[in-house]
View 1: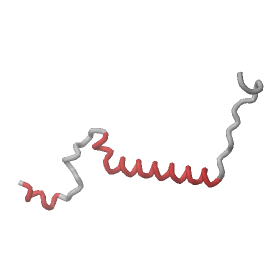
View 2: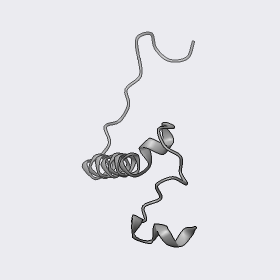
View 3: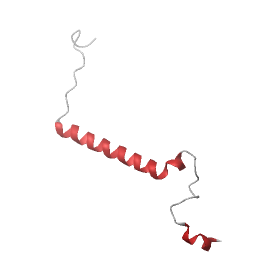
View 4: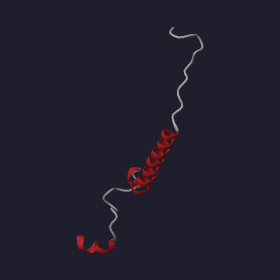
Length: 65
Protein backbone atom coordinates (compact mmCIF):
# COMPACT_ATOMS: atom_id res chain seq x y z
CA UNK A 1 0.00 0.00 0.00
CA UNK A 2 1.04 3.57 -0.56
CA UNK A 3 2.30 5.75 2.30
CA UNK A 4 3.73 4.98 5.69
CA UNK A 5 1.72 2.78 8.02
CA UNK A 6 -0.59 4.81 10.23
CA UNK A 7 -0.32 7.99 8.17
CA UNK A 8 -4.14 8.30 8.03
CA UNK A 9 -6.22 11.03 6.52
CA UNK A 10 -5.63 14.59 7.70
CA UNK A 11 -7.97 17.05 5.97
CA UNK A 12 -7.24 20.76 6.04
CA UNK A 13 -9.52 22.94 8.13
CA UNK A 14 -11.47 25.43 5.97
CA UNK A 15 -10.96 29.13 6.57
CA UNK A 16 -13.34 31.29 8.55
CA UNK A 17 -14.79 32.87 5.38
CA UNK A 18 -15.79 29.50 3.98
CA UNK A 19 -17.29 28.29 7.25
CA UNK A 20 -19.31 31.51 7.58
CA UNK A 21 -20.45 31.32 3.95
CA UNK A 22 -21.42 27.66 4.29
CA UNK A 23 -23.49 28.34 7.42
CA UNK A 24 -25.17 31.33 5.78
CA UNK A 25 -26.06 29.42 2.62
CA UNK A 26 -27.23 26.42 4.64
CA UNK A 27 -29.47 28.62 6.80
CA UNK A 28 -30.89 30.30 3.69
CA UNK A 29 -31.65 26.92 2.16
CA UNK A 30 -33.52 25.72 5.27
CA UNK A 31 -35.44 29.01 5.60
CA UNK A 32 -36.56 28.64 1.99
CA UNK A 33 -37.53 24.99 2.49
CA UNK A 34 -39.61 25.84 5.58
CA UNK A 35 -41.18 28.80 3.79
CA UNK A 36 -42.22 26.61 0.85
CA UNK A 37 -43.46 23.89 3.22
CA UNK A 38 -45.63 26.49 4.93
CA UNK A 39 -47.02 27.66 1.59
CA UNK A 40 -47.40 24.32 -0.23
CA UNK A 41 -46.95 21.64 2.42
CA UNK A 42 -50.53 20.41 2.42
CA UNK A 43 -50.45 20.02 -1.35
CA UNK A 44 -47.16 18.14 -1.18
CA UNK A 45 -48.47 15.75 1.46
CA UNK A 46 -51.72 15.19 -0.44
CA UNK A 47 -53.95 16.86 2.16
CA UNK A 48 -55.41 19.27 -0.42
CA UNK A 49 -55.43 19.63 -4.17
CA UNK A 50 -53.49 22.47 -5.83
CA UNK A 51 -56.61 23.74 -7.62
CA UNK A 52 -58.86 23.87 -4.53
CA UNK A 53 -57.53 26.77 -2.49
CA UNK A 54 -55.19 28.76 -4.65
CA UNK A 55 -54.88 31.82 -2.44
CA UNK A 56 -57.73 33.94 -3.81
CA UNK A 57 -60.38 35.27 -1.51
CA UNK A 58 -63.93 34.05 -1.79
CA UNK A 59 -65.32 37.55 -2.57
CA UNK A 60 -65.52 36.85 -6.30
CA UNK A 61 -66.60 33.21 -6.04
CA UNK A 62 -70.07 34.03 -7.42
CA UNK A 63 -68.59 35.28 -10.69
CA UNK A 64 -67.10 31.91 -11.66
CA UNK A 65 -70.39 30.06 -12.26
